[in-house]
Image 1 (cartoon, helix red, strand yellow):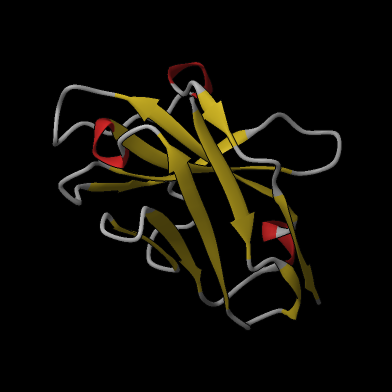
Image 2 (cartoon, rainbow, N blue to C red; image 1 turned 180 degrees about the vertical axis):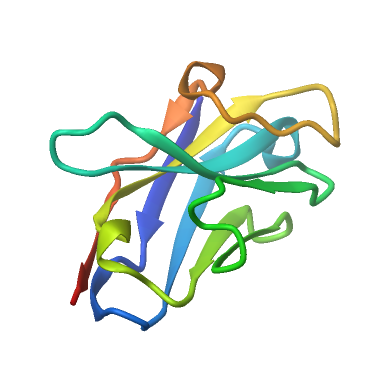
Length: 126
């Protein structure tokens, strides 16, 4: 079992920045590839970014160049630095963990992730 707790959401003006954190506890953090997803009202949950144990990253086209995902394996924490925020980035952001035996694998589908955090609200005003 892995427990994930997100923090760092809030209200920010367009063009601003926020840094989300996801603290993991439970099983060995190194066994998990990590991802961030978001869900806006009335929409399906969508992929934002993913990072492998070794630090390989992948981003949705909508956030590429503006968001950066990273992880600190010693602290068992994954981060999402969000810059140049837009009103369309408004959503609840979820952290997720996917068990893997590969140090290099990352995943982009929701059904590839076994564990999810409770989410943190990000609101970007225009």
